[in-house]
Image 1 (cartoon, helix red, strand yellow):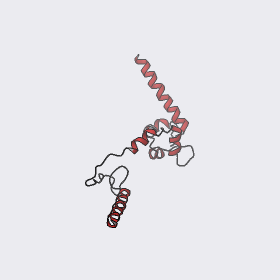
Image 2 (image 1 turned 180 degrees about the vertical axis):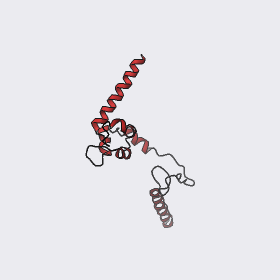
Image 3 (image 1 turned 90 degrees about the vertical axis):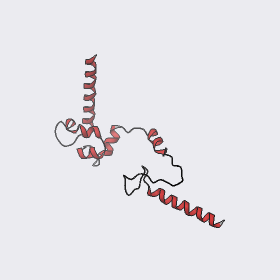
Image 4 (image 1 turned 45 degrees about the horizontal axis):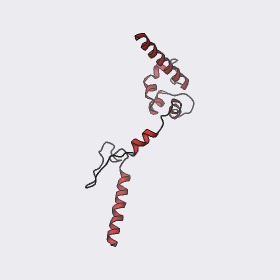
Length: 129
């Protein structure tokens, strides 16, 4: 009986150590491209927790995303900061937003550019009717 409990504890410890060595996206943490390891004899089910947490998390506003990307906290977002902060639309349209060619954009300039783009799309849609 003592051997059985020792063996169970050893298996549990090994499983916990293995679980920590695997990234949450699957695969080894040493090689991000490797597929998740298959457990022999155990039924594997896809993790459902990450999908549930994504659905319940509210989308961040532009103000919040700008603040997170603006690492210098000076109210000026450079192209590198926009790329690092994953502001894809700002990165893509950076040259158009930065009309004065200063090398940075502000939150007000981004919002004004977006409003201009919405107005242009609305005018094009209304012209089709």
